[in-house]
Figure (cartoon, rainbow, N blue to C red):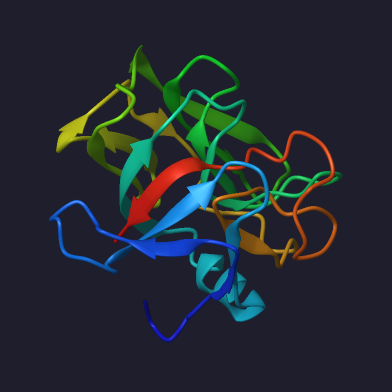
Length: 178
């Protein structure tokens, strides 16, 4: 949204959560992703944001990415996806001070079904939502986000550039819809 149209790299159009054809993207879990324009990082400067998506996980992939502004060598503003191989929804942010904070859903997410997921950063707390319900405990933060890492990708973690990270890439294997 907000004219932050991404560049599609290998992801293919597919039916979304509503069943409408060509309304979502399918990610193969090994090379497909969407690169978000670098100016998107400017929207983090206020320390407040909301991100939501419809997600479908085919498999429990290691660090499966929904959207990440998080590099392979340096932390970014946020990581939103699954936590390691736990199959739990996870949000990690880095404050402007360099301190990282985590919100983790207490239960695993069901594979092979659509889920609506979201996070909000309201300037005081970070909140994590799954299927319309807040999951986990809100985590207090100082209202700031790290803004120096400019690369954001959908479906994979960026490396030191917009290209996917060489290790722990967290390629998404499934579908994403807005």
